Image (cartoon, rainbow, N blue to C red; front, top):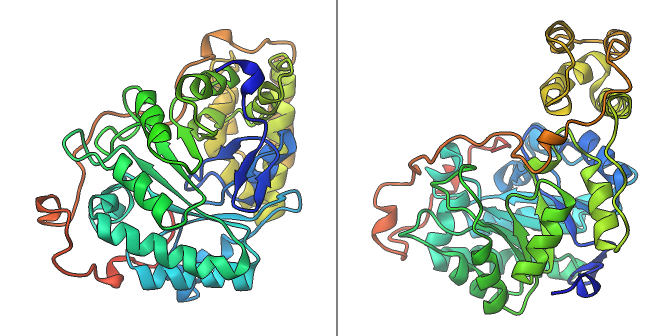
Length: 380
């Protein structure tokens, strides 16, 4: 595929996203403040943190509080997790009818034990009939509102229990607008390299749009993924941690424009200050600054910021304190080139996947999953 034929937009049902780039929902990261910050950098689809369907249906305050959207979010996009078709269908209806959501994504890729041990996340596609029932219920609930439903998944639980091709067929047959594939198994978690060949195989197997996910650290990686796999767009997760300007670079790359030069440390500091301010707008100054602490190591990765400043930034609790510490950084320090193209965020090692007893014995459901398997909390 040549650069001239790269997709310029992403169509999901009647929704047309200005460029084929989606922010992956990340628990504790992709709140309204971070999504606004990313949207200020470049157009795309920015997905809310994962929310449990049961939390929506039961009116859980924590879940509903996550349905906060910034003014610059052109499309309200939410990712749901659940294991019960009826509950998920009802949650989709509430999201569309009561909260004006424009796009619903269903999570079948989370490898976290608290999700998979209940048969959810990356474990669920193994039960293909259940997967179909959930997707069918979701699409049916969203259809009256014209809201597209998509799903995100992994290759499978492990190399002996691959599900992505079946999941793609089921997604297509049930009316999903697209499927996103993270080219790793649940066992891999975030370790090793993503298998882009699986993305190409899925693209060749279905007619609906396929979005590729995994190991996109720079804009050039996204272009290469599309060229190598033929996918219709990309989903970016860990690559944007401490680097929201990656969305600016992605927008430029897909538009066939030259990517802007890398930011110096003073420009990075300005983005850090903006991020903290947006968190403060959302949560209040002190709590916003405390929430911002988790992002500091990502922003300063590779910079010679100094141990003392890094340590004190990790305890920041006010804008004045943050400004004073950011002012100690060398504004002229260039971006650390050694950090380009390298993994960010969690990686870890392969881990055994926790699934319900007997889950892998058959792809059929012996009994319905108890809806109470959802604990009503959000995250993962």
